[in-house]
Length: 242
Ligand code: IPE
Ligand code: IPE
Ligand code: MG
Image 1 (cartoon, helix red, strand yellow):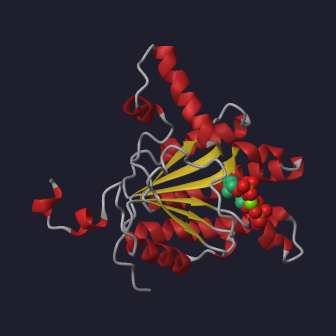
Image 2: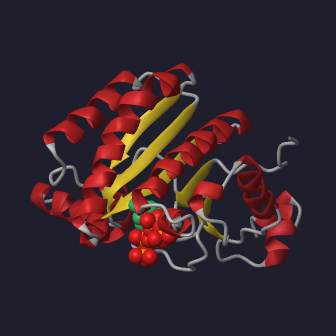
C-alpha cells in the first residue's frame, strides 16, 4: 500500500456504526462493538506505520449511558477484555495509552485496567493513543473551568487549554467520523476548532487501512487557512509576515 504524502500529526476518530454493522447481519449490537475492536487494532497499527504522532478515538460518550443496560455492560466488559488482551502488543509497538474521560463512574475493575495500561506503556514514544471513554466535550470544558476556579486561577484560552483532559497533545489536525452521520456528538468541542473534518458512510467495523489512507489523502488536499486568505497561505514566506 503506498502511503499518503501529507500525514496529519494528530488524527481523532468518532468510531460510529458498530450497531448497524451488527444489525445488518442479524447479530447482537455487542458483536458489532467486538468487530470494532478489530478495526481499531488495524487503525492503530496503520497510524504507527505512517508516522502519525497522536491518535484519539471516541469509544464511549457521556451520553452512551442512556443505551440499554445490556449494551452498556457489554461495552464495559469489552473494554476490560480488550485492555487485558491488547496492551502487550501495543506495548511492543511503542504505543503510549492515555485514557481521557470521567473515570469516577467506571467500575473498580475497569479503572484499575485503565491505570495499569497507562503505567505499562508510559515510556513509549512512537504513537500517543488517547482513548476517550465516558468522555464528553462539555464535560471536559466544565472540568477544566472548575479546576481553574478551585485554584483561584484566571480563566483565559491558554489556562483553559492547559487544564483540559487533552492538554498533553496538540489539537487534532483531522477529525474522522464513520457511520454516515454528520455531527460532532459532543466530541472534542474545544480542540476541534480548526480541525479538518472528514465524514464517511463506511461503518466503523469496515474502516480498514485503505479507508484510513483515503481519509488522510483527502486531508492532504485541504488548504488550512486559520482565518487567513488563500493568497497569504500560498505566498512566498517573505511576504507572509505582512
Ligand atoms: C459506535 O457505534 C460505538 C459506540 C457508541 C460505543 P454505535 O453503537 O453508535 O453504532 P450505530 O450508530 O448504532 O450503528
Ligand atoms: C458517538 O456515537 C459516540 C461514540 C462513537 C463513542 P453515537 O452513536 O453515540 O452518537 P449519536 O448519539 O448518534 O450522535
Ligand atoms: Mg452510533
